[in-house]
Image (cartoon, rainbow, N blue to C red; front, top):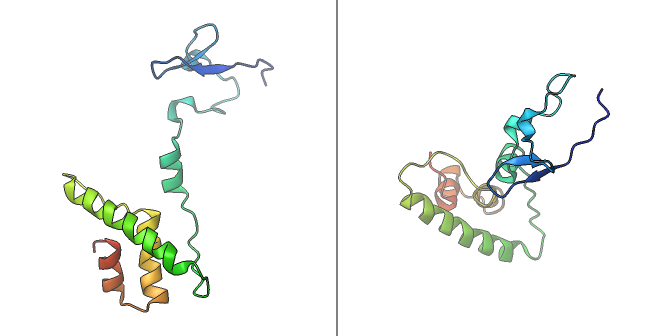
Length: 121
């Protein structure tokens, strides 16, 4: 294993370089591909691949207020999807939470819960 330590910074043009101006991709790692610098994840993609668990407590005093806020965000999300030319079946955490709330707390059918959350079949 190499004992060299490199400090990388963003160069202001979207590239990653060392303090000397050498690009990060110019460094070869002897022990294989320990640091995959070609595929640096962004936070959005990370959150999409590692969703947070959804917990709904019917006895929570703030549940109704939380659901009203989430309903508002879902409505904005549905409007944005309608404006988009191509839309893939990706759903926000708010849509998933609203779907589960309507299904498990309000006891709506799956179809009605999906419609209210803006989830297409």
